[in-house]
Image 1 (tube, one colour):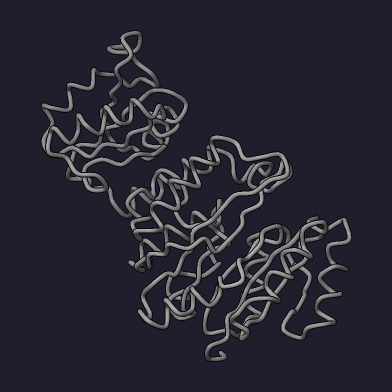
Image 2 (cartoon, one colour):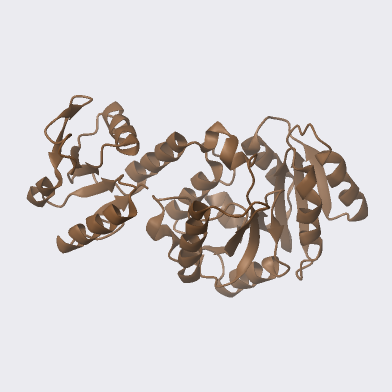
Length: 335
């Protein structure tokens, strides 16, 4: 392990048109003590030759070929080759702001181990950014500015995969890249949360996050909605669920049904609530649905809310707060 060295792990596959911008953004970093461990995940374009040309010009850039297939084996291999006392990840299609590494390592050096340094992000695209991504960016940056990312961890991944940094020792304590659960960035975020690593607030945009149609998170099955719901339920049951309290599921749409099936498969009892008059008192999967007012008769319930509509979410939050219930303790939004 090299003190002060930042290991930047970069899996890449068929991103030749973006790799030059990505690697150049690392070369111009104000913090110079870094190494890039780039792993070729069986690219069929000229990605490998692009990275190899950079590696020939700068010995800090090292390139290897993935022994397995997919991003998790690539990350595992990259980490096994790394030597830094600080670990961070970068995606091969994104761009670092010139001060990204400096800001992140300064925060970690100031606050010590037991912390995650994160940065704000900005999406960019040749065709413009959709309203959904704009809302996600605003939401994520709002959390990052305050360091309150974990407060909404069951909604979406609250740490952007190409914009975090931790001490190597903390990374190892959290299991590093050894987990084989997808989405791998969300799983790592939950393990940071599980191990109580504190998120350090940041008010600067440190990463430019590229969006395009063939981006992995848009196209690969591992990033489909059912994987996100599986990982949310897995960690909720292991980290925040109390078997001594009544469990409630709100909503009977796609997400509500998926969560209900997951609970039934695990033989976990729950009460299913909704406000749809066409579903109240009906049964789905043999489970009766009740009007949400049933919650008022339960003693210290825990609620999983799967309702996606933003207006409905605000109404539900107001209702729950009126019952003196607390976010992240008594109720959890899974959407």
